[in-house]
Length: 316
Image 1 (tube, helix red, strand yellow):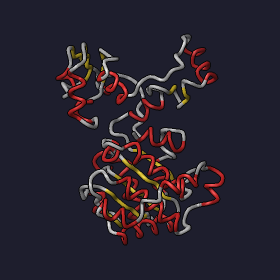
Image 2 (cartoon, one colour):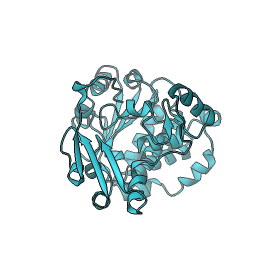
Image 3 (spheres, helix red, strand yellow):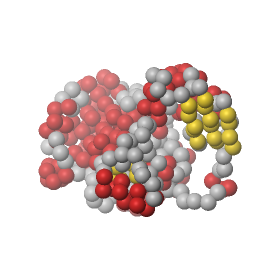
Image 4 (cartoon, one colour):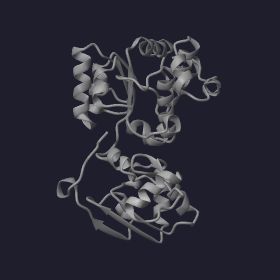
């Protein structure tokens, strides 16, 4: 979902900068993740910048995590409503004239259409839906306005929900509207749920993308890899995991080989996922553990954990 939301808004599925950019940002907003436990090295950089260098911190989470205890503003929106408060803050900032019109003119398409799409996301509507007060929403908007660069970090609290792609797009659109891309100390930073998710995507393990986020439908980009690999590459994108589940449900896909993914546990609409996996004619799962998904498999194969193999890791 994070990758999809970023592709829809900026055309790439990775971080907008580096950990150094996050550390030097004037404001960090953390949505639906707990870096202290999930990304401790990054969390240390944020804590240091917040404590020693005056960085402001907003945390949005259902739980008051250790990072939330340190924050300048903590909000606990109702479950599944992050998109609403993000779009309400964006609308309010545009209405107040706090958006970066020069950046928008140079870098953003269809901005007027985007403004129209925000019409219903008033502060009153957001307060009713999310449970976050109007005053707090305005306070967050003012912090973004006043900050010397804003970085937004988000994790599986956003992406492992129905609508995770739309919420990721809302995060990116807020940053675009306020000019928080293409400069130091700003941008979108999806914190991946597992080690090397980012690295795997960078290397092209996405159904429609080659390494470096070059699309398989682009003839010139495809030709480079056909020459390097010495094979013909299909110009049609493959199916993502949601599309594969639909294909199984429709009887178009009869078998699946799943490696290192616990779809039965982490995918949205779990009951439907369980039903679909049970309907496969043949299902192979290869994993380090006997996962919940492996319980639906006809064959379970062992896998090597990171310390038993060679390679690189890009965690976020």
